[in-house]
Amino acid sequence: MNNSVHYPKQQGMTLIELLVAVALLSIIAVMAFASIFTLTESKQQMQETVRRLNQDNAAIGLFNQDIKMAIGQQVSVNVDNSLRLVGDTQSLRLQRFNPFKAVPRQAVVNYVKQQPATILDIRWFLRDEKWYRATRSAASTSYAPWQERVMMPVRQIRCQYQSLSGQLLDHWPPRQGPPTALPSAVHCRITSQHNRQSDLIITPWQQIW
Image (tube, rainbow, N blue to C red; front, side, top):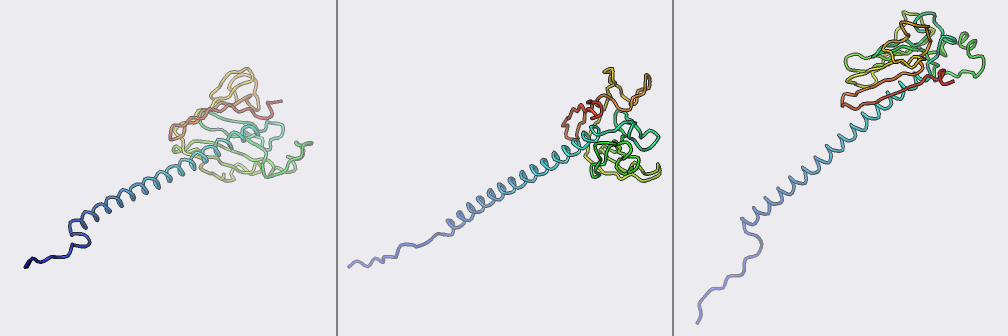
């Protein structure tokens, strides 16, 4: 008679197998979390880059528009330096039509004299590695405050002003020769803090004709 005892086969996992499974799941979870974190961080960096590029493009576009719409002596309001574009390599001041005010196509000079708020005084300047745009109504006195706004952080700005003879000058108006209300073109190189360079050649609308 066989007295051997038969034990049932073991069901489930041993403690070692359970520990190995937990370790593997932990590694997979860590890898998945790291991948998600990397993707999230990359998405945030991309969104920040897009936002910065949009801000830079908006600033450069507005600067371009201001110079294109600069007005000369004929229709300017104040009788001082603001009656024409005045600039150096890192800053400039001009007058332009207020984009939020309607201006008739005819009799512009008389209309502006009656409605001076139609014209804006505008300054672009560099301060603490930031590019500023300041505005106020051209009808304001010289003591009226400017409304300043930071447009974009920059590393460097260099502008030059092309005379009617084609000469590029670091200052406008020319220190020698006949005075001219507006340059024939403004050449600027703008370098952002991330070393993105933008080269501009802007022609005021009054010089196009």
